[in-house]
Amino acid sequence: MEYTQLGRTGLKVSRLVLGTMNFGPQTDEADSHAIMDAALDAGINFFDTANVYGWGENKGRTEAIIGNWFAKGGERRDKVVLATKVYGNMATDAQPGQPAWPNHDRLSALNIRRAVDASLKRLQTDHIDLYQFHHIDRNTPFEEIWQAIDTLVQQGKILYAGSSNFPGYKIAQANETAARRGTLGLVSEQCLYNLAERRAEMEVVPAAQDYGLGVIPWSPLHGGLLGGIIKKEAEGGRRASGRAADTLKDPAARAQVQAYEDLVGKHGLEPGEVALAWLLTRPGVTGPIVGPRTAAQLESALRAVELELGDELLAGLDEVFPGPGPSPEAFAW
Image 1: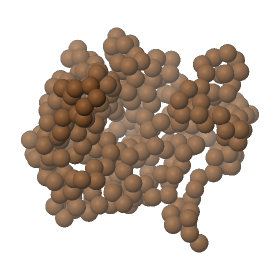
Image 2: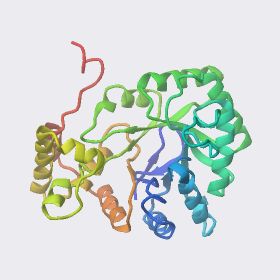
Image 3: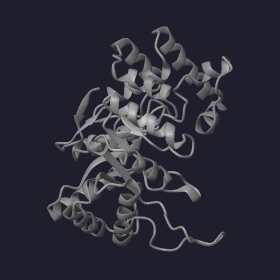
């Protein structure tokens, strides 16, 4: 496994991030624990989750599964750089059809304090290494957010703060506010970024680079679209669903994905592994999040770290999936 610094920090993290969103909803606890053990054995030390994972009535379940894994001992917690998130509503007493009870979501100082303590309890740990804002909160000023975060850092409950799904201007606002307070600010941005969705290159990635944030792409296979989905369907395998199925309904988009699979096949490579390896070549990227449902999917992701993409293939990928270009040239003269 290769390691890199997380943004401008001294923290060393693996170039693949283990995403845990499937733990609970699609992967049972025993298999989830086996996948985490396999990830640790392979050198992956960066684990990502969120307080809402498990979803619906089971929100918080994923953090609890990770906490039970930590409780097994064997230096599991000490070896992991643990990242979780805050924003989604975690109230459990709302009546059906009624609004959720207030102050159990978003980024108020009250909810941040409440959410951290609840996550620590589920995760069975005394600190979170990277505490991420899952979305922007248009109603809470960054002065209040950083006041809450600075207190948690002083208490030793969190070490670093990161963002997720932030536009470039919010990254700038957040870190300029932190700078005025004399604190570290955001050290990472977790964003939607892959070969088929490159809008982050316009402003999010440049803002992250300018402010020293590590970029952590989520959905690196774009919901399975870049994992060889057309070939799998033709061979009677798993059919496209969700975002991938919707995209393939468009003839032009389907032709683009087919061109991608043909290009990768010409080089004797697997589409999913190429999609991950491509992200590892991108400026500013710390490492993509992989969310395996099975041990076999984890093994495939691990091969991407060793994959070297030649200039001819990289040029071909840009032809199939051209990026928007930098801002403002992407939309101005």
